[in-house]
Image (tube, rainbow, N blue to C red; front, side, top):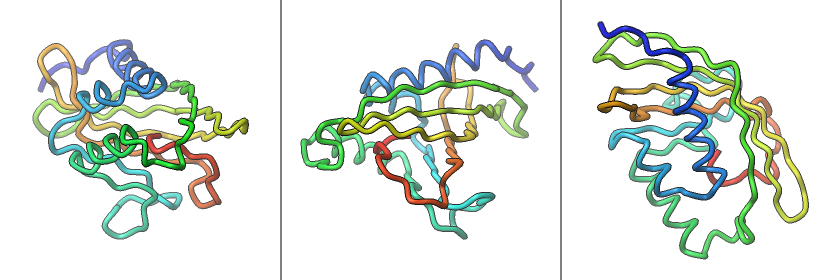
Length: 160
């Protein structure tokens, strides 16, 4: 087993992932994900299996690519004009995964979204499954458990 990376290293990675989204650098954001990645926003509290529960988003890497292409196409009318966002990441915890040197990182994320002169706040707890990739990491799974996932979600950007 590889030694567990320092929390600060993983924090920098998570901060960068959030910043790329906030700056609309979606293609660079996609590069952080492995080819077999899963991006999941469950629709209910406590959902642990996306095949057994309804999801807000349950994307493979291919679907993530399509989502970004749709955002860039000018046909994402819900994002015209594009939401302006700021994400705050805190409470980062790192733990070892059983296989291949993968690690699990947990954090709290607060997403502030400004859409058509209306500010919405989306607090969430996130879980990342990260694989070593040279000197950095690739995201194999990203789960965003929105605090208000079982309520009407107005003003939610395409990418949380």
